[in-house]
Image 1 (tube, rainbow, N blue to C red):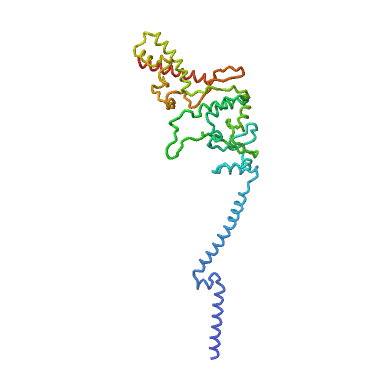
Image 2 (cartoon, rainbow, N blue to C red):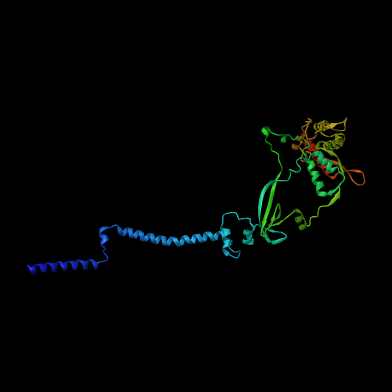
Length: 357
């Protein structure tokens, strides 16, 4: 009995040592892998997550550095500045710092008096400064031109031009439409402003190719244009409308047509009849205050002449001026207008004669 008990105990001891040794010698098969078969995937996911986070962290930190550094402008010598500006699809800033950083070839214009100054242009359509003169009437311009004063030749020329287009004649095409809608207004033109690398801004500059001048005076001086001359104004008077000039032209036309009518007796009857219909022998002028442009001589609708004459104007021009010698003389502008209208009327008469042949 004793031997059997001893043998049984010995066998159990040996078996326990055997299983214990088997368990310790196979670490690649841990006990939990048997009880939790999904734990390996969890471990892999955890491992890959750690790897992923470790890979993202440096990239994220570098992005932060990049973003923060992009807010600060690079030094002017940085080669990346030009490439970044040229690849950008946005309009370049007109700040002086951005202009200073850019290459001179990237700028649009240079200052004429100092080509080392590079500039960017900002052009826009705008109204001319007519608000200050919109209330000046035809009578005001007459008074200015009729004054005995000393002033700039350019101002005198500007007044003459303004008087010639002051709207003295009622224009049916400019009547105020219904519902208060107006098609009038100040004339529009292109303005150009500059922002330059010398931290200066220039408004309403004068362009000359890729150069610009800061004023008309600077442009004129650079191109040898004579400066404005200050003169004593010869007071102007006898202000005439288009129909007033035409009335003087009609008297001259009466003389010309009368000579042709009398001298050329061999003229065809149809032509003679046409020439005879033009003449107002009693008043030694043409029949109809708008002849030969149109036979319709209705009052108060003289603006229709704009459709017939290339020399139409809807204001006044001065017929005479009185200078230092005190003798009134015909103004140059009146003589030019008279000659042009006379030539135009003779051309119209010749066309009508050809039709009558």
